[in-house]
Image 1 (cartoon, one colour):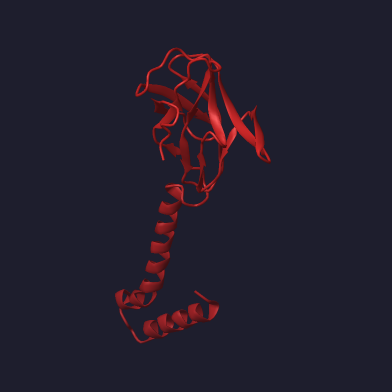
Image 2 (cartoon, rainbow, N blue to C red; image 1 turned 30 degrees about the vertical axis):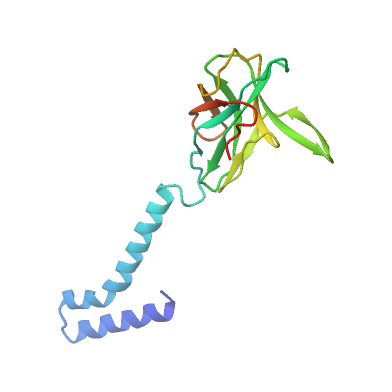
Length: 181
């Protein structure tokens, strides 16, 4: 309320008091503005409590997929997930584990014209109100020396983040060319 409006309410309150208006009716003058302020405070408190006021919110992801290593190719494969960040605070995927153990490398592809190469990274960013969509053309989880796998097998992964709790997800093994759209 502006100062002018507050002084107007105070004047009405004093006039009502002088003319013997009961207190219950006098408070009716101040009730609506005070009620609106209390309601606004309650809504803002709730919004903040559920993470709507710029605080971190846990990332989310669904199941992913991984490539079936091809016979005669290098003994490595990759897994892919789409990770969504519903909060305003950026997060980072910092590591991953899978049910077979062994090292998993976070990897980013670097494109240089028609050619490219990949490099290991210490973290993959998940922007606030955005997503990290892993793909063979961008970022993935590289798995060296996987055990023999069959198409359709579901493999369990645990992804760790800088701010969010770990996510336990599964990835379905797909043959080359079986990439989901």
